[in-house]
Image (tube, rainbow, N blue to C red; front, side, top):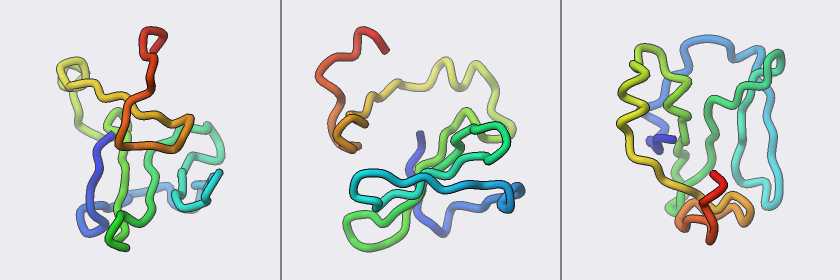
Length: 93
């Protein structure tokens, strides 16, 4: 995922088919395709109250597979909705 400010995000197509999923604190909007279920991005407010986006880079147009292979891997503790810390166990990921 790549985290970007709202002014750097532009959805090119497909907005009518998107669905919104929220859980726990309901502070993040996890957007997904209502037909195929692909989760391409999420948005919410950062710690300063500004909207920011988390884009799944594998959903971007024009990204070569080798770029994704070479990209660093970072784990998030999604069990506790914690984007700042990795989970305690990652061997199974």
